[in-house]
Length: 141
Image (cartoon, rainbow, N blue to C red; front, side, top):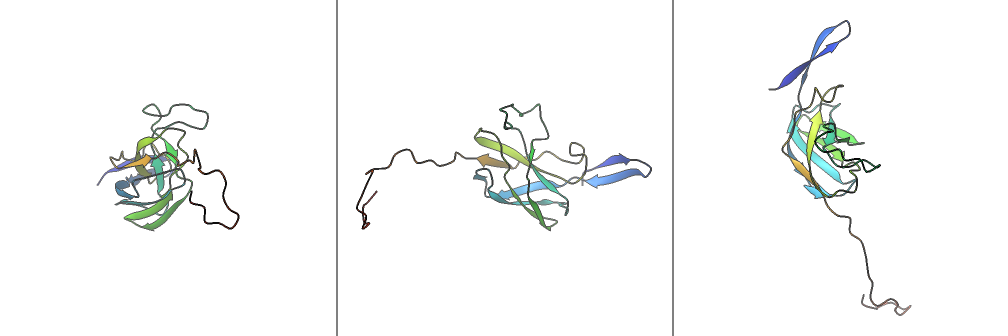
């Protein structure tokens, strides 16, 4: 079991057990995708974190920014399951590590995970043919 000590004013030390991610479903999707995050030592106050990527201003936040992006919605189910939404992750597609924090000081109370979520491209319609059809319906597109 991995833990760390956090100094708190007037009360000495508080030991916080690292939450760990062991699995994720689905493994790919877009911003806002609902995820089941499986792990160990999850708490009602646990937060899902998605590493790296770009912020809304286009700033690259890969290795230099270990905090990544927190899910705006995390729902505790049990010590082995929480549900969260994939946060906005810039315009980048690809795999990012998913971590869980169990404390106020995120960088101290979080273990790195090897479990990844892949941001997939958002589907888009580029062309429709034919461009018109019968108002009665039945036109094959």
